[in-house]
Image (cartoon, rainbow, N blue to C red; front, side, top):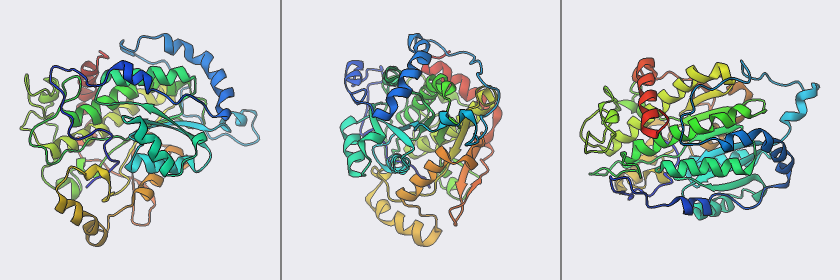
Length: 404
C-alpha cells in the first residue's frame, strides 16, 4: 500500500462547492519565491531570461495547443571531450511538489546533497518548507521555496508565473504531492469545486505539468524529465492493489460531471464517496497521464516521462488521517510480514535516481525496485495502461482545468 509523501494540504480542508478559494492570489504572490538566488545561477538565469520572455508574455489561461519540437529525440549523453559538454556542467533545476515532508523532502535532500541540483520546493506552507529544509540539513544555496497550492488552479497559474520571473531554466518536474483521506465520511472540495483527492493529486498536477512543459522544452540539460509519482494501490494486478476498496475509474462519468457531488458523484466512476478509493483512483489517473504525456510529447520534445512506485513508506505523514491502530501496526506489518517496508530516506534516494540516473532515462516507464534495491520496469494493471481511457481522461482533464 502506498506510498508517497505526506500531503501538503491539511486533510480538514473543506472548501465551499461554489469554488471560493481561501487563499488569494495576492497571498500567493507574496509568498511566491525566495528573494535571493544562489550565485552560481546568475549567469544561467541571465541567458535563460532571453529565451523565456516569450513564455512569460503568454496568457496562462489559454490552451497550450500543439507544442512544436526543438529536437526530435532525447538528447544523448554528452562526451566530456565534446565542445557542448560545458552546457551540462551547471547545476540542474528540479521542481518537487510536496517537498516539505515525506518522500518529497527526502528526495530534495538526496538531490541537494549531490551538489549537482538546485531544488525548487513547491509547497503550500512556505514557512513549514523552510523549516523542513533547514531541519534536513539542506544548505540554502541548493534550494528555493515557492508557494504552490495544488487545490487551487489560480495558485498553480501563479506559481508558474512566479517561477518564470526567476528566469531560471527548468530541467526536471516531479509531481509528488498527494492528499489521502481514508477515513473521511464526506468529501471535501478544491477551490474550483472538485473532490479534493482527485482535484489535488490529478487535476492540480495535470495543469501544472501542462503549463511547465514549454519550460522543460527549453532546457539544454542532458536529460530533461517529467516524473509523476504513482502507487501500488492503484495497480490491481498486485496483491496490495486488490485490497478493498479497489481502484476503478469506470466510464469516467463522475469526472465528466465535475466531481462536485451536485451535478454528479464526487467519485470518478460515479459511485458513492469513499476517501480511500478516491486516493487510489487519483493514482490510476497519475499513471495514465504519464503514459499519455509520453505518447503525445516524447518524440517531439525529447522530454522523458516516467512514473514510479518507490516502495511502501509505512511511516509517513501521508497516513496521519488514518485510524491510530493502523498507524501503530502498519510499519511492523510491512517490515516483518510483507517485507515491503522502505524508509523515507531510501524512497527519496530512489526517486532521486529517477530524476538523475542516466540508466533510468527511458520514457513511458513505470519504475519499481526489487528486494535488492535494484530498479526495474514494472507492469501496470490493465486499467492503468488502457490507452483509450488515458485519451479520454486527458481530454476531460483539459476541459476541467481550462485548457480546452
